[in-house]
Length: 82
Image (cartoon, rainbow, N blue to C red):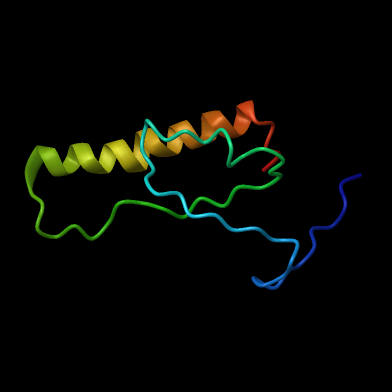
């Protein structure tokens, strides 16, 4: 049976936060995912109002699609459970 999830305050000492400088298809997640049980991915490229056209679409796809896919792949490889 799976145990109940614990509710932690965001300042709980059992939680560890890290800042990833850039998320895209080239991000090296190696050191960040070691021993991680859960990944909460909230990052996305949004609200770039001055960008126009296909170049802008390419930037969105690089971060939001390929970057997220790379994080998912690396999470599976690192045996992240959730």
